[in-house]
Length: 385
Image 1 (tube, one colour):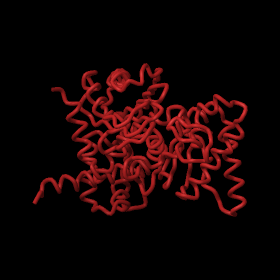
Image 2: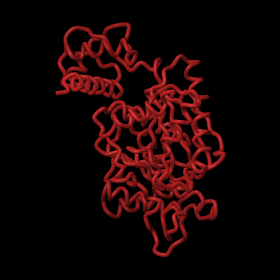
Image 3: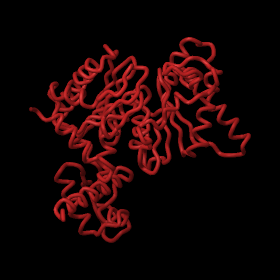
């Protein structure tokens, strides 16, 4: 029996439960944490002491009356100790964001993507992350991990980019390239995670929501490519091969315009950034196609919220407005209440901030399938030879 290992896993699970409660409800006392988590008061007291000593938590100077027994001390996530770094490798640009555990952006930067050569893209990313890390060190903040996202179908468990047509990448072990490049750039041995850009955007909206996150939630990225990230039951829904949410390559018109993937009539050919650039006067029509796509996502997944981001929406607000009108018309016809449809909270940095949230999402869910293997692989890749 792995008694010691099992006990350590139980402790990690219980610690993550308390951290997640305090992220959603800052100011809970030890008594409230015990009541909300179902853990014993003695267990909560011991774990809180460890989390305080480790710098994860901080406590208020003055006790308050929380309605459970005598006055108690409110607890909060300590934002002055740890931070996250997120990266988006997009088709035309690389974005980096340094983020607190509660989603405050401390620093952001972007550069044109110098080359879509995988090795050069990884080296450029590593240099930008190294610069961001030096900024965190200057603030005396510890780096929890680095999340990276890119468009296309990603196998999160293996770090393979299965299919990224707009970058010309297929069956590419991008995680290995990134971790090696970051090790050479002087990054400490922290976990590195890789995910699809829309999936990352969904996690950013979900993890850094005020209070309890909306679940189910769908993030739609309208950039050069078009994709969706889906959070359901507190998890990303990625599908069997990481290809769930590739809505940009769903067919919206038989024998329609040619898409970058080689097929005709894909959603990307109507609402991707290239389509909007080629037909700038047809924003209302393109917005209608986006609305049709959102209505299909609504009826398929029944989400509480759909968040739309990417350059298409950042540059053309009327594009999303036309889509919202289309969904409202379908809603009225069906006599049903549609989900909330809104613009991304972090604007152009949505995917980069979401990539930072990816590391936190993994850390707070130690029972996630294959999370241990991913953390071990990331740590080994970043360790100096």
